[in-house]
Amino acid sequence: MALFALCGFGAFLFVTTQYLQDVRGMSALTAGLCLLPVGAGVVVLSPRTGRLVGARGPRLPLVASGAALALGGGASIWLGPATPLPAVLAIYLLFGIFLGTVNPPITNTAVSGMPRSMAGVATSLASTGRQTGTTLGVAISGTIAGSALARGGTAFTSAERGVWWLVLGLGVGILVLGVLSTGRWALDTAGRAAALFEEVDRGRRREDVTESTLLTLASSSICIWAAGPVTATAETKPVACGCGTYAAGADRPTGVEAVPGHDDVRTAV
Image (cartoon, rainbow, N blue to C red; front, side, top):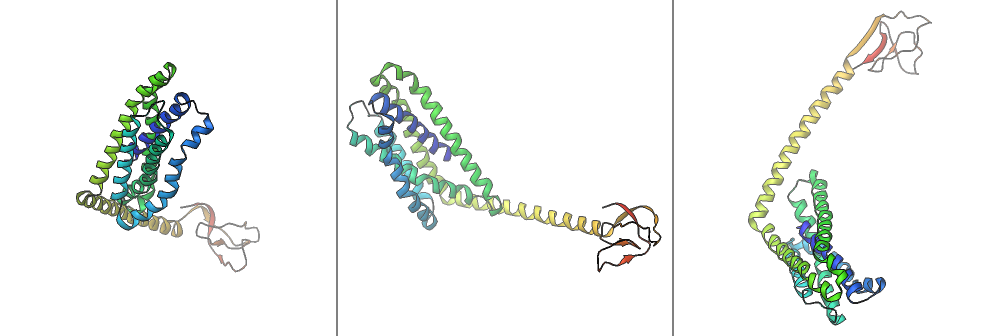
């Protein structure tokens, strides 16, 4: 779903900027201001969508975002050089509704099928899907409509219809996947997968604890000595073994007792 969503939005951004500047003759600043309905939709709807997902699940936001993207793509098919600007802005508002409602349920859907220890993996997969989708959207829309820019406004609006049909199809895909991925069968599958991952993770943690305990016991009780016993004389140099004891007669910290008979330590395991 992340791939579909951001592929559609990447295509929308690429084609829209070309349409506003090259077909309608707007400056870059004016074209940017025409995209304010998209930003307004994100600002207004994103927080509310997050609360809705937490309260009622991701199905309704996913259905709404897919429907908005499909409607925006379908309405954009009829855009031309003389389309009234209010109608254009109303279409862009649909894309704002789409973007404001699609991100929270995608993240929720990705994380819900993983145990807590793998939440980072789930969110990174969703983020990878977003980045890949954006790249594909720009590349595909540029391939479809980019060559028509040199031939003028009417030629470009005719060529970009293929992009809008693609966006419409992606919106329908998100709507269908949103319904399927939030149904009873999908939720049961996600629960079983999360339980399986959790069991594997618990087994891995037990193995790590056992190995760590064995290594700690070995390092605290086994010292390898390289020479015979040290005689406690004034010339004895300060030495210490891996478990922290000092040779007899060595200069040692206050409160540390000498251990007669300890050898000069070279290494410890």
